[in-house]
Image 1 (spheres, one colour):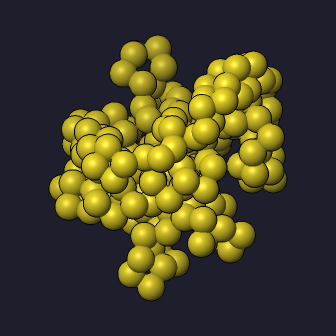
Image 2 (tube, rainbow, N blue to C red):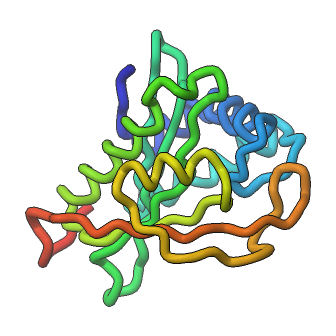
Length: 180
């Protein structure tokens, strides 16, 4: 498996492939912000809308490929406020249902964490559906569970579910001057 950081052009060029990953992930029950069934056009439009944030440095996106096929993705969303430049939110960690259980999620998570630390980020945070398989990944990777918010978001079937908030403090070589 290879993991590549995407620029805005590549994200636009591969939006249909990313749409397939997103739609398949939602269809498999992952709560990543969408309801099922997710139309391919809607999924592609969502990814295309992310290109401006990637181009502007507010979002970094990595893609995992295995044998030339997209198998996963992860992103880091960077705040634009001066008092929060030391932190980022881990977003849209997805592994295609066919690729789960093979370490792809862990590799993507490690990639995002290393890139964040190299950019001077010292604090990461995320939210994930309470009770989801993702919670095991984050706990095993040393993330700290902060707590759960009941009825926070609808799962792909539309049922309101709690979400759990996690954070991880990073050691950064450039802790005083975050760069992206």
